[in-house]
Each structure stands twice: as C-alpha cells, then as structure tokens.
Amino acid sequence: MVMVKYIYTLIVIFIGCFLAIQGSINTQLTSYLKHPLQGALVNFVVGAICLVGLNFIFKTQVPDMNAVKAAPWYLFLGGMLGAVFVSSVIFFIPKIGVTTVLAASIAGQLIASSIIDHYGFFGLSVHQISVGKIAGILLLLSGIFLIQKY
Image (cartoon, rainbow, N blue to C red; front, side, top):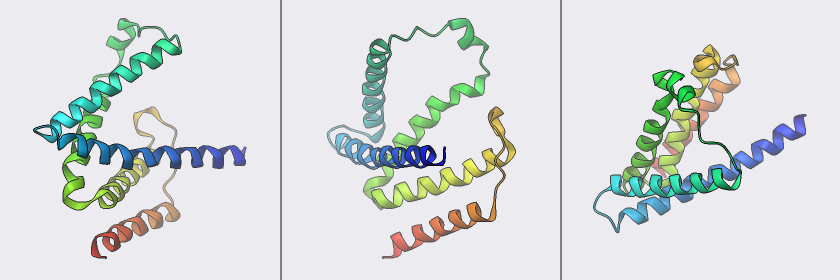
C-alpha cells in the first residue's frame, strides 16, 4: 500500500508539471489576444470541449439536474476559483516569472489545504497539522524568497 502511495505521488508530481506548461502556454496565447481574461476564457472553452469529449469517450451520463440543484451553493465556487487561478497565473507570469508564480501558488495551496485537512472542512476527513507540515510550508516560503532574490 505504501508503494502505491509513492506511485500516486509521482504521478501527481508529473501532472503538476502541466501547471507550469499550461501557465506558460496561456501567457503566450494571451499575447495574441487583447487581455489576460480572454486567454483564460479560451483556456476554459477548450477545456470544456475536452471534458465533453472525455465524457463521451467514457460514456458517462449527463448529470441529474435534481442532484445538481440539491448541492450546496458553495460547491459551485470551484469553477469560479479555477477561473481566478488561471487568470491570475496568466497575469502574473510575465511580471514575476513561472517559477515564482507557481511556488507562491503552491505555498498558498499548502497553507489552505493544511487548514482544510486539520479541521476537516467540506466534509473531508481530518488530518492533523504537524510540525513537519508547518516546517515544509516555512521551507517553501523561504524558497520563494530565494527564488526571487537570486
């Protein structure tokens, strides 16, 4: 079971590389458009088309609208948060670089996820914060300083 956890972690690290590629590509796409929000819009339109195709390939069903309506309102903020993230990445990469943008966004993700894990927000299982987690976040924050300084 431990080996599976490591394999999953390596897969996620590999997929994490996609964020650097995506941000860089979207930034270049925006250079052909008039505004970073247009780049983000094109990104989400292409993503939506891709998801429709994947749902077709995997023969999933159309979501039940009654189930969608029953979901709490805050569960729909994910799309909005994704749009803010992608738009922000496109905006900030030319200003501070891909490395700084992604390191800072990962630090933010780790801070928020540690809080979510510790308290079990959104109905998730509780994973107590530890000294090691706090140290890791502080090391990443230190790394952001070093990335920007040198």
